[in-house]
Length: 609
Image (cartoon, rainbow, N blue to C red):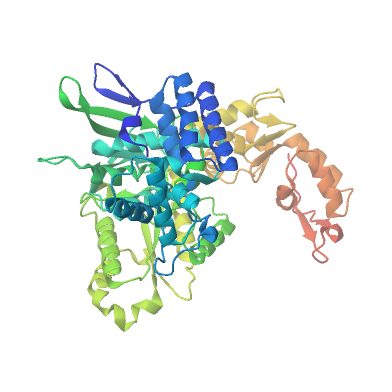
């Protein structure tokens, strides 16, 4: 933050919009670099601050913008250590025992007292006499005392050290400080950002500053990756009927570093400033990530002592759970602390985990037993979400709740038993997980996700079956082997699924609906289907299967079979499945694939008519 008198702003749209003047040009970079250089040189020479200020005044004159230069120097001063030379000269002082602490202020006091006993020191001799008398009483050299009289004044302080920074980092810090200074006189602040992890951090800062806030959601079309397109937090400013105070505005300004650390953010504020003709006037101030130059530079975090984003997980317990879920490869995307669920009461709930796939969202909240009050507040929010009492959007919230068995039997938590009983009565049995020993079991969650997958495949097949089958017919009827989804006699069903943004299981289901029985059956009402064999996400043409069968009958080992199948450009991951479909068994002799062989079952070999 920088002083108000150094703030530079522009006014647009007939005097309603307030826009701060940020720094980002090459000319600005040159100015910031030169000022950093001046401070570096002053620190190396241990110059007095007055000499540094004199050189800064020369830069001001050449720059033509004194407010900008002084605003930058205000920030650079915060990275300096200025001190008087009294401490450095302490070893030279032979102080009287009855004066344990000597300072410039004390020296001046003694001089004034001594001067009051005599007539005014109108001559150099009289002045020297007074100085010598006081120096003797303090037990120090007269010249040293003369040097230390005004040693504590600002311009006489020495620059002992300067913590250097890059010019681009200083520009980012300056731009951030400009926004913070504007918010000193803010009547209302609204900000939005994405991601539950970011929200959790910012809301903690809001509560830490003791600010009053409310949260609402704004939906718009075309955005499907989040439950809410935009989540807006409104924080009341310091406007008072009697007068306006900057204490509350300072608290608002402290939120800015935390907000701009998010991946996607925007700010809207209403700023009170004095105008020449109308007195105080309220201006509109808007800013987002794209419009803020260089504020994304990470330096400001350390410059302002702002903690970094830290670990993704709050505990090793949650990290272990996330690792186990990812290892299951369920096909669902897992997100840690997703966007908040907003209740109509203005309260916010951020679940621990979100599982998402094909537009379906399932939450998981692991109830942590910290204190009774915390537990009751947590359960109150969960009950509101499950029952849909406060927000119509919460009726469709699909949420699992994991509760530690060990705490349910603890005598310290009997006070929360009514809330726990009500929670258990509202939630579905398959959505309530009791865990112990710090491990949340995955079986219930994975089983439910698989059920949702099957329902999703059927629903998508109902929607896209006609288009998928039509596209498939067009491909198999095309004689050109270079058709868009055909390559070397092999059709990729994954590419067909990607074209319609559906899972490959939906393509399988749509093609199976196309005819009775299994797609691999040689019986078909359409000639094109009997000419293909389905293996995993691939459809292989008849002539390729015939050639493949002839080649496989000539080999005995799995490695040889892999070399033959590689010619079809099918990934090795599906080779075993293909061999099984063709009527071969893989005989393993240990874990080494080099020792494995293949054996045909002649009564099971696939042959096209």
